[in-house]
Amino acid sequence: MNDNRPIGIFDSGLGGLTVVNTMAKMLPNESFIYVGDTARVPYGNKNKETLKSYASQIVRFLQNKDVKAIIVACGTISSNVMDDLWEAFDLPIIDVVRPGIEACLQLCKEQNKKRVGIIATEATIKSGFFQKVLKEKNPSLDVEAKACPLFVPLIEEGWTNNAVITQVANAYMRDWQINPIDALILGCTHYPLLAPLFKQILGDAAQIDMSAATLQTTLKYLTENNMLKTSSEITSAFYVSGDVKKFNKMSQQITNMPISAHKVIWE
Image 1 (cartoon, rainbow, N blue to C red):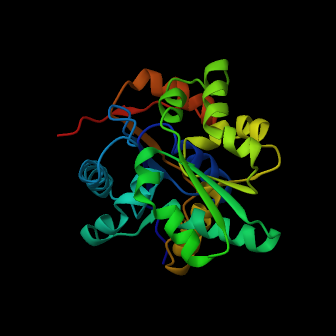
Image 2: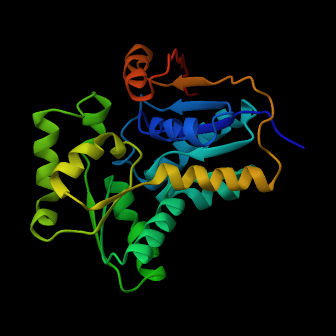
């Protein structure tokens, strides 16, 4: 038995579109419903209770749209409130952080990498989740985490390639230019949009984009549970809580898809 219902994907804003791009390559037949909570972006400066409230609201919204599974395409939610979501909702919910950590551990093992840098939002770094799990699973790793709170607001403004963001990135990563890292976990789904800039600053450090690992986890789950889509018709929809026109313009640049998002107003 297969399942032709869409997959739900959500993020605080544009970042989860990097997951949509990866899904187009890895699960091209699947339909999806994307929610960008652009009215309340960024999530990285919110406390845990607020994050739990926002995430629960969006999961309920997607549940009402009859999705078969949900990908939490947000590093901040993934590292702070997944246990709450798994407990509260009876449907498959897949986060980006755990698959991202596994991808990093695998890479470090295969390529004998020792020094790992993590960049993420303030709430993600403060949760300590990345650091804790990496050290538990491989105590020999030298793990260093940096909160980069300015990246998401700048990316949401479309500032992915200008002097301002270059200056900000150089300031955040100056230590790693002096004492280089072997691998960099992009701990927020917005950050792959800055991958060329990080390469410019950090050179050959391997960049770990969580979306590929997350989609592999999703594919495995759907395959094992006979939930892959059989219909060739793809129906996807986008919902945003903020400025629809701005989202349409920015998201088309990121995905190369013609996007006409719907407005969602939270109760």
